[in-house]
Image 1 (cartoon, rainbow, N blue to C red):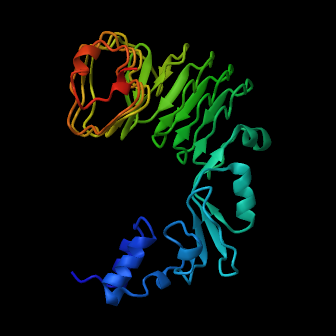
Image 2 (cartoon, rainbow, N blue to C red):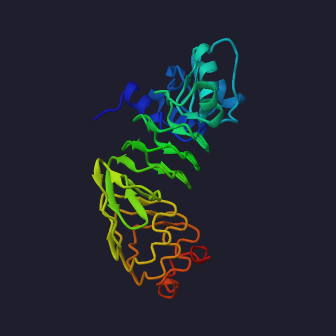
Image 3 (spheres, one colour):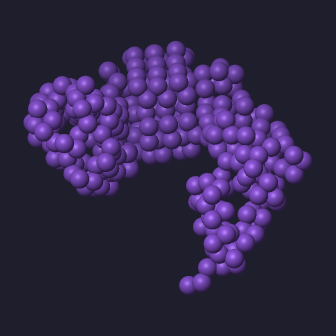
Length: 308
């Protein structure tokens, strides 16, 4: 297959920096002028690289500290870094696009308890101390619930967590004393203390104290001794098995490439765990106060930070 102008332009959209673009045009004469074909910047730009992308009309801002150019040729901006909902509304008025909108505590107090469909994540303490909140439906656009998101929502009785959510913050449902019902897509397992859920990142949340029903059925909490992680999972998240005191054995498939911080922290009964060679990243405190800590320390691949 012979690469044409369109194919090489699509390929170069994934280049890392300006040197990749320059080397392409120097190395292959028929692809000279590739940068001139772009009407947006596929990478962050500086004063030098801006001059090479001469026909940009839409400017993509990838990081909050990216240099921005208002040289009269740019008509629209696309913002990729997290932006508060209130800021998004201002950008929208100017015709700009925000890809990562966060609904914050300030936004919730200003715009209400209904989560706008454009929002991608709920920020730190977003609904914290919202004692009048009795039920909430989280739209499928949401991928993250921030730390203490529903902290001390004492009247919250039910909540829907869609499969799009891949991250649930610390103390997300802390002191939700009336929470008795949850709907959770992709529910994996319920132990006495934790709910394990979601793919491809296996995460867990502490079971709210009074929770009785999940997905319309009475929950049966059981004391887990063994846990077999599905092969579809690629990462085990922060604090996932933390303080699962009765856990004695874990089978980790070769699909796993990362163990999060404090992943098996305080698993004092854990005596058997396989560490496949596929794992390239170990989180801090991953095996702290773990039952098989002494054996794991013999594994030269595991950094010392995993045990403290």
